[in-house]
Every structure is written in structure tokens, then in C-alpha cells.
Image 1 (tube, rainbow, N blue to C red):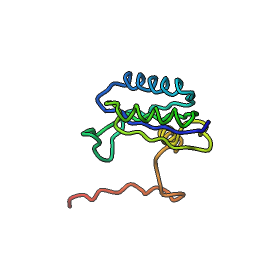
Image 2 (image 1 turned 180 degrees about the horizontal axis):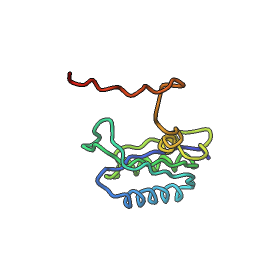
Image 3 (image 1 turned 30 degrees about the horizontal axis):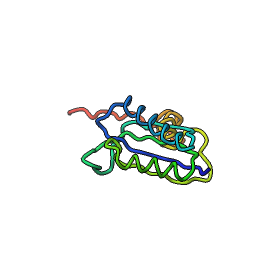
Image 4 (image 1 turned 120 degrees about the vertical axis):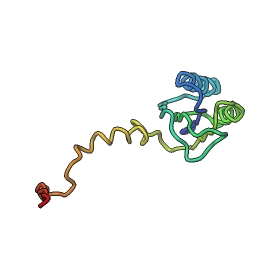
Length: 135
């Protein structure tokens, strides 16, 4: 069986609970056709660069899939006619990525940067400015 990464975008006006139910539904479709699901990540509600079917935002979900080609074909066929799915994309990969995806890592990288402050390197901070009085 081949390895795939499958990403889909769901409409902005459905709830996070409905997105979970959609994800479970698509898992069921794949498992019924001989596939298995590995990692599933919900990236949440994100802004789109341009409108898709009159939506400015969408719920993003990515899944690691191990399945035969027929299972992927059936999944995409059902997504094409589902009203809550804006877009989907399936790509074949050589190996599934271990750990969180780049999108999930991006938020945690901000915590690892350290405190913000003097970006002047090893130069000392400026002395406070003296106020010029009105004479």
C-alpha cells in the first residue's frame, strides 16, 4: 500500500465538533476501503489568501494515510460532492513525517526564541536622554 498525506479545508461556519465528526467520517471511508490512518492534525480555523466559495476562512485538517489507490479515489470522490468541503489535496509521500507538522511546530518556536530586548548585540544600551528645559 502507498503512503499519502491528505489535507482538506472545511467551511468556516461549521463548529470544531463538526470538523471532528467529518474527520471520523473520512477515516471510516478509508478504513472501509482497506486503508489506515496515522497522524491526524487539526490546524484550526485559519484565514485564506483568497475567497473560496464565498468563504474567507476555513478549518484545516491533515491526515497521514496508508491506503491502496482505490481507497484514495473513493475518498476524493466523496469529498468532491460533500457540501462542507471547500478544497482537498492528496499527495503521495515516501515516508510519513515523525512528530508534529511544520504548522504545529511554528507556534512552539516562538516560545524558544528567548526574551525580546536589546537587539544591539554586545553594545551597551544608550544612556537616558536628558530633558532640555525651557530657558
